[in-house]
Amino acid sequence: MDLLLKGGWVVTAERVEQADVAIKGEKIAAVGADLTAEGAVVRDVTGKYIMPGAIDAHVHYQMPIGELMTADDWFTGTRLAACGGVTTVIDYAEPASPAESLTASLNKRLDEAREQACVDYGLHQVVLPGQEEDEAELKAVVDKGVTSFKVFTTYAQRLSLAAIGRLLKIARRLGALVTVHCEDHEIVTAKREELIAAGRTDPAYHALSRPATAEVKAIQDVIALAGEAGAPVYIVHVSTMGGAEAIAAARSKGQQVYGETCPHYLLLTGDKYAGPDSRLYLMCPPLRTAADNESLWRHLAAGALQVVATDHCSYSREQKAAGTAFYNTPSGVPGTETLLPLLYSFGVRNGWLTLPQLVRVLSTNPARLFGLYPRKGSLRPGSDADVVIFDPRRQITLTAANLHSAAGYTVFEGFNLLGYPEATYLRGRLIYDHGRFLGQAGQGRFIPGRV
Ligand SMILES: [Zn+2]
Image (cartoon, rainbow, N blue to C red):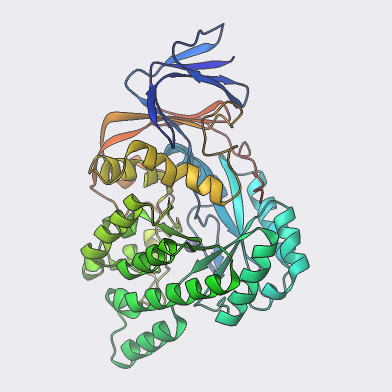
């Protein structure tokens, strides 16, 4: 045994118990009452929670869009993850065009991450139009440990509903999970043209340009396709009450539909677009209403939504300021570092989630859905020793100065939190402690998913 975490409260997907955690090498060795040190380094964690490291299952680090590059790259993105108690992130491999093969884009992405990542990582494979027909390529990706595909119903990358149906059927055969960005392209396009024709192009019109009906319709369409294909499906970044209700309804009929939401959809509203900093809050889908916030919490608490991830896609104030209209302002916000503390303060402390539910939505559920369990998302003996020591009494006011994103701002500026990560261990190594990052570029590893 190398390290003994003594006197804390162990929180897992199932329970909270007072227990010690013993770590040997990169693995959890034992969890139990009054373990003896046997020469190990002992860390007194009395009064703290010991939780499996969080998994941010939806991030975009070092992502080019045209000429523009996100502010956070693989290094700063995974460094800020460590500082927020996130020990695994799942990013995306995306072909530059349908002419680039899936495996080529995947290999390129793995090469970019290898020397830079400070926490462990997995990838989702973006599938572009036409690529959904190539079963051999799709299988090659799964064999390399990428067990989830990502498709869009809007943007240039969009697949037709027929193409999504084809992909769902192949994915079912391969045991892979199709994840979908759901906004109906026709509704979004019509709304955008209407606003442009009326001269309403300011970023303040962002939420109007991508209405809730667009998300709800696309989610309903995709659920119907998945039902027809007999395949599971995962809806990313659900932002609306209607979307959550559609998922809940399908699940209650026994369909395998999974839903993810993000802290900004739980905690912020479209009122932000009326302020002077509207660009800083611009992401797709947009922020909605307080009624949507509450409905998303309710569905998360009820288990109709299974994952909270961040869609971390950061741009600096300068990059954001270059936008002159809702349609040309860089879309995305930073989020990985504040995922766990926000969900604790506003989920657990406000009574929406129990501590085991917190671990489920931030760690165990994404690990299971993306083929990483029980290596990740668990504190059982044999699991990777990815551990967060969480101090439920630490008070902090979120502000850019105490966060680590190269974006230089947070959409949660001024939020008062009670409870914050104190330390983060990645496979037994201390990578964050009391506000200090102690990790290194290149120590994060690709964790292949298994179907
Ligand atoms: Zn995204």
